[in-house]
Length: 207
Image (tube, rainbow, N blue to C red):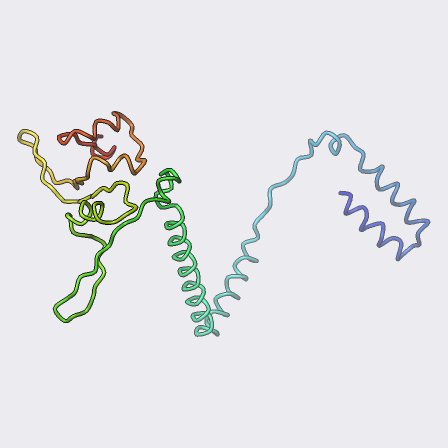
């Protein structure tokens, strides 16, 4: 409202002079002081959609598309590829930034994963994310600076309970696994993992 009054005042200054414009500005301000304006009870009409105008806009848009098919196709594909690259880059960055962040900072800074290099028949060296099982205890005896180690093996096993059987992903780990990683437990205690016959179930399997 204030902006409209000021705009009207500036227009009156140009048309009828500053003196008469000030007088008309005062009258316009007083005219706005009514009950509905002060109390805010004015009923606003809903915005009407003018379908003929919208129809005209759609027609113009489709005509532009028809006249510039290749140009619009190139721009659309370029925009789609750019957005896909940005989303993919963000997801990769977020995954690496947030990976296993629930572990304590003290443990994370001191944990290293051992990979292995395997020489193929052709003489090439290939890097594998896994390492031989005997490597960890052997390295802890012969390499300085290794305080403890843990090994983890994931297998797909068949579990049978009475007459019911199902396949499930199973992981085997050393007793030091939960000493090095801070996986949260819903029930139970970390000390139970010292027993060779103990198991830990994920919430998905437990439910």
